[in-house]
Amino acid sequence: MSVLPMVLRPLAAEPHLLPTDDPRVSASGPDPHQLLLLGAEASLLHGVRCHGLGVAGQLARRMPPFTGHGADVEVVPMRRLAASALDRGLHGRDVAHVDAAVVVAGPAPLRRGSANRLRDLLAELCRRLPAGVPVVAAIVTGDPSPQALLRSAVPADVVLVELPEAAPGRPSDTYAAWAGAVARGLAPHVGRAERRSAPVDEPRRQAAVNRLAGLDLSRDDELGRIVASARAGYGTRYAALSVIDADRTRFSVRQGFELEEIDRYDSFCASALHERRGLLVRDARSDPAFRSLPSVQDGTDRFYAGHPVEGPDGQPVAVLCVFDPEPRSDGTDDLVLLRDLAVAARRRLFDAAAGR
Image 1: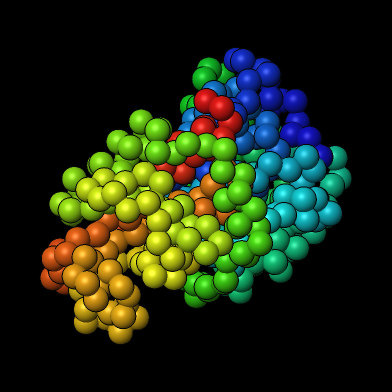
Image 2: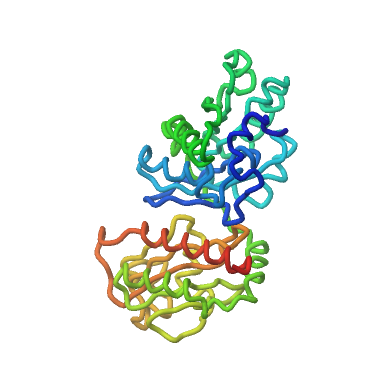
């Protein structure tokens, strides 16, 4: 199902332009909400050079002022806004961690008598997401739409947000207006559902690690700067970007030490890999989960903070971490900065894998 040409024409300052950067966009803030953004490419990012200027980036930046949380928005482009297309759109995505989903649609489905198809898509999406996770239908209404027809396309448990027609001028201006409307409609509902944990799909994750094997991360200047920034930001003796292989933790980029690898399960990073929102251990000697680790026993590590770093296909492949022999007191650190730097590392891995 395509978006109506009337939506495309005002966005067509560069009509064939679509971004090729990382389709996951993040905004800084504590305990970030995970959002899925579904729709046709034309209605999400047509005419802009990067996802940050499309609806995803605009939405990520507009959510934190409403919620007080950071935001991670992942674009899920769909050729057809239909329930039958969800398998392809959601393939490989871990929806157990999703806090909300937004479907952007043009007015075409309503005027073409396809309201039922859109309704089926929204109902199926609600069924696949964890209970209580809000779904927003953001519909470009164009000409005044009969409310009865509009409501027939949106199930009662889905939040309806009406979007204005695309305005002449820069596409990013239209996307900003749409994202603002979605953020205002979504904010009262996001974060209410119970967050679920789900095990990492280890075969898929290991395959993603293997695909990075040809990259010499130790020589990547940008990754080196990211690790150095983490070390300076937390004032620790050590910092690293650790790639978690099948049975080894490899310190691919490191600051303050020379050790190249250790047994996977002798490292904090093996645990941090599974913590979607990061791991903070202020004094490992008093923590029964970590006090038996060799690096804690020998006095190398007492304070540790780590945040997983996803590879180009969304699988957690590495951990950005800082650690120190001195413990920290409660309330002296949080993971906001580390998460922001982990996002920067994720973007760099995406570009490096693409040869940029």
